[in-house]
Picture (cartoon, rainbow, N blue to C red):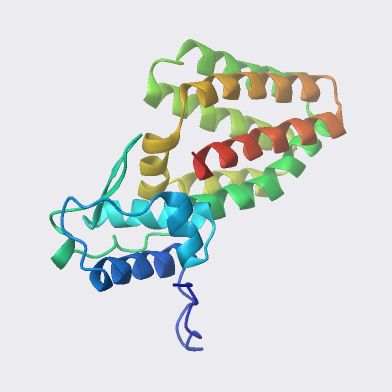
Length: 232
């Protein structure tokens, strides 16, 4: 069953892809008369049946979990929830996590390069402070996430362009309910440790005013996050 979005009305915004996929999964559950507690097909099979990427599928499954349609059990699979018959996907609240990551790859890669070109000693010190905070607070998830945000904003400030600071702040604020649920299920300790290494590599390139190296280090970091969240 291929997922093909209907042509949008000119007066209404085009639905987000994960919403279209979520609707298709709800239809599949109903068509196959799946019962509460029944396991959905494996992600690889389900993405092939619907004709969508694993990233779009995972976003859809998280939206359905938030809406009480399915239950995602890490390491086990996705199961129809007891609430499924009267449930629906969670309300749309903004761009999906992989949309945000794609935008960040485009923008933050160039931010890192510009930071490497323009960073002052004090700007580099601010980036280092955020890295040290992340390392110190590695076991404190909330503090670690705040330090991560500080790191990316410090890079934006190092460019000397306040519009870029606003853009990075906006993208960070799009990390909403879907993002945090996705991270809860699919972030690994290996990725968390590698993120610290990635940030050190980005810092080193900026401190050396290595524009190409900073761009590559940022791109590698965000591609690693995307790979981790989009495949088992």
